[in-house]
Length: 128
Image (cartoon, rainbow, N blue to C red; front, top):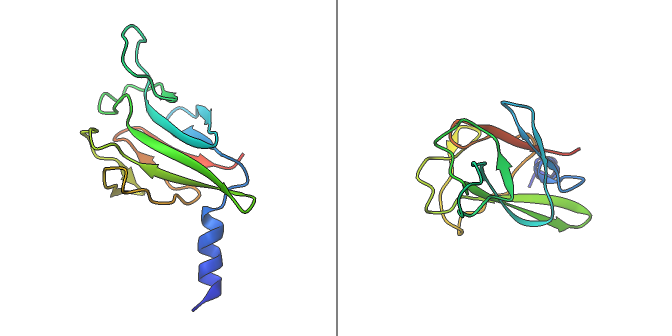
């Protein structure tokens, strides 16, 4: 087994802190925290619908109010991010241009600088 490939793959997933979610369209930054947080479209707050933990201000009408979950875990003095899409989300979510499967059973580990499209808004998680 090539340990160089293995180590670089691990390093690509290790963050020094919980990370910052950046809206690539507006440059807006949203700090992440340990645990599960929901990400979705910010609405007018005039109804009693569930609000996302990370409310992205966007004109993307195809983004759901709760469009995805980001789970931040801490292991061995590093932080790792998993993502999952609720089954109820109607529109596709892309990770580096490839569709993500829906449902809590699908939780891939994110790597640094991967771009998430939901479906028009683009975000990524960075160390900061």
